[in-house]
Image (tube, rainbow, N blue to C red):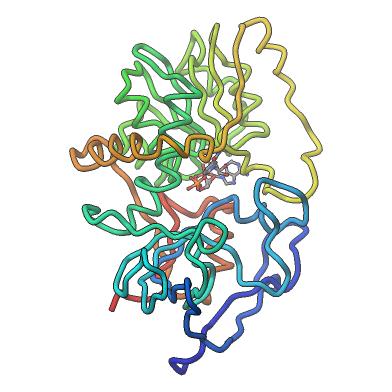
Length: 344
Ligand SMILES: NC(=O)c1ccc[n+]([C@@H]2O[C@H](COP(=O)([O-])OP(=O)(O)OC[C@H]3O[C@@H](n4cnc5c(N)ncnc54)[C@H](OP(=O)(O)O)[C@@H]3O)[C@@H](O)[C@H]2O)c1
């Protein structure tokens, strides 16, 4: 590739179900210099988030859909190569919407690339994609503010080996939970959830009898359910909710975030009434004005070794579509990342 070309992975067609490689096209676009008020950023690391699948649907949501022919929208970390904006200097490491491309050129403000300079005290910049970034913040606010976890609580976290769930369960423990149970889809992941992340146990969500098997570790029910999955797993969790339980609806990856609504709804929702339980959805952006507080707490816990995390790194921009699929196939352990280029 010449230094004036910019490899971009653009959306060719919208997926109906699973994201396949042919939904995207790898093109080479000319690399342009930043105009006044703009920056030019080299992409170093890309973040993979289940929400990206939702951004491919042509339906109204909390962000507009990715346009056909445009580079796929993605959070990531980059290095500023050239700047015509007063808040950014050449060499800055930044976090924001760099997209599936070698270089992002544009307005660094909230309506453009939404860039922030990374804090200088991060031991590893990649932490800004996971535990010190969106998934860590989601875990923090979902567990503390929506789940309102407290001393003595019995807690269930679905997708516990993932970026969000693994941190959510460890925060529950740090906030005094009595027991923390997870779910995960492979032996390796379940071992990691217990041995490294310190959950008390971890249930295989692919085996049958979910209602019974989720109930075994919590005979009096779950005070807090932090749900990343939805569908049958959420229904089985609902059946095991404790009196005055709190269910934090973080995500519903089992829907595949496809354009249509799931065909089957929840059967155990009436227990919300009889057990006087509360089920509440949230977006991490609801807590924008409190990110500094959460980052300070997460930074302390990670530095002290109280929150342990994993990264799953794929190499090469051209593998971005396949890397997104890994989240929906359950192949990632911890935060799914893709390495695009080294820092200069
Ligand atoms: N509310 C918010 O603001 C917010 C912000 C960030 C993320 N989220 C949500 O949080 C959840 C986790 O996101 P993440 O980035 O941390 O991803 P992740 O948990 O690191 O990866 C997704 C995991 O989900 C599990 N999974 C995939 N398909 C499944 C299915 N059909 N049934 C059961 N489990 C399945 C897989 O693990 P196993 O099969 O091994 O369990 C997979 O590894 C997602 O639902 C995401 O949309 C919400």
